[in-house]
Amino acid sequence: MSEGTGPITSAGEGEEVPQPFSVTIGATVPTGFEHTAAEEVHEKIGAVARVSKDRGRIYFEITTDNLPKVHHLKSVDNLFVVVEYYENYQFKDSKEEALLDFQQLASTLPWTNALEVWKMNNSVKKKRSRRRGAANSKPKPSSDASDPEKLQTEPEALQEKDEQKDACAEQETDPQTEQDSETQEQAENKPLKFRVTCNRAGDKHSFTSNDAARDFGGAVQEFFQWKADMTKFDVEVLLNIHNNEVVIGIALTEESLHRRNITHFGPTTLRSTLAYGMLRLCKPQVSDVIVDPMCGTGAIPLEGVIEWTHSFFLSGDNHDMAVSRTVNNINHIVKRRQDGGSASPGLPIDTAQWDLCHLPMRTSSVDIITTDMPFGKRMGSKKKNWDLYPSCLREMARVCRPGTGRAVVLTQDKKCFQKALVRMSGLWRKSHTVWVNVGGLHAGVFVLRRTGANFGTTPEDVREPHRAPESQEEGVQDKV
Image 1 (spheres, rainbow, N blue to C red):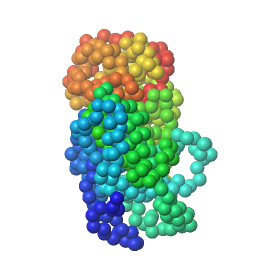
Image 2: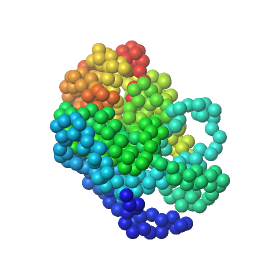
Image 3: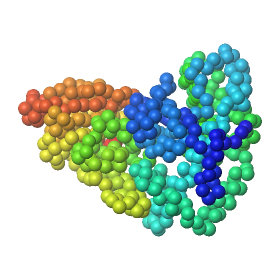
Image 4: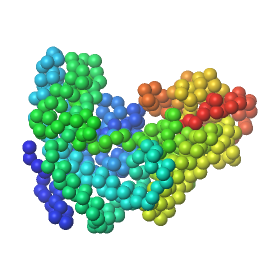
């Protein structure tokens, strides 16, 4: 196969790169938030994203000079470059014939552009690694060195500023850098290691996912003379099959981006990508006060404070361990900023331990409430939710501004929440619901609007609802 695409231009220091060309990028996103992710792509990159028939995926075209911007998207879990897309692939009826088609397909695919993007993407990741190495050059406490949760992706907010420092940083060389270059040259002379991952959905296929991955992978190995390695691979080839839709791609992310800002995890830590999607639904504005009354590990306020820097975030929980985890996660981000030389390393966020049914806030002082309520499975119980949900909605209505306040609430206990919402109908109106998949559970993200009624004037808040459990630690615990 031919190397490179398009005219070659000099990039300085003897480095040559191809001129920008167009490619299609695929992204996996939290199921149910495909359109929210498409909005972010259009807002930050200017591309029009197509929502796949297979839920949880979007596709959009970019030019390769915009590749770094793709990694700044907050809605996406994983990224890949599309090699080929078949909207209506005609599978053979028999298993043998269908698998034979996969074997013959590998040598006919247009791999060149996708592999060029994969190489460019590796350069982007190396720049980030160098920045992280520089930022982490200071000695760290021994407790951090032994904590596997510390090995997380760099916060996206820092990457924008760090891009400006790349040119200067790359001019500085040291023995380690030269050694890395020699190692890289040696690695380039060796055959690449790869694996094929097949994701299949549909009940009309005569083959299994393992069958397709094995036969297609064997053909890829024969075509490129790569070495198969299921764990320590350089290239991950993706074979996504949804009924008759087939997409072949090359992965651009080694691990999901959904844990990017979390170093201290709780038992039900919310995915950062899902937290970001929830915040986008409530459309934060400049100077808004945004509260997460059941913050758990702080995934929602952390996403918010990094993206919406001109709003102020308050987070809290009734459980001391949850508050401790949130504080540690905030401190981790602050330290990243300090190590990165940020002029304003602080964050407009605060955390407190509180009773979520009696929040220490003035009436009508909050613009937005965004929270992940206990599902009643690993946290709390379905029985206790019947008391907790109406009490929580009532207190949320008290602190939220009448007429303009809004709330975005995630829960899998949909029946209980909808009953509580009917009970508090004088204080809250449901705008719409986004149905999502959370760890295999079918959950709802309820977007609510605060009615114009002043708190204390409706039957819902005059009649005292059932109190939350005496020990909220038993009922709610450290939720995110």
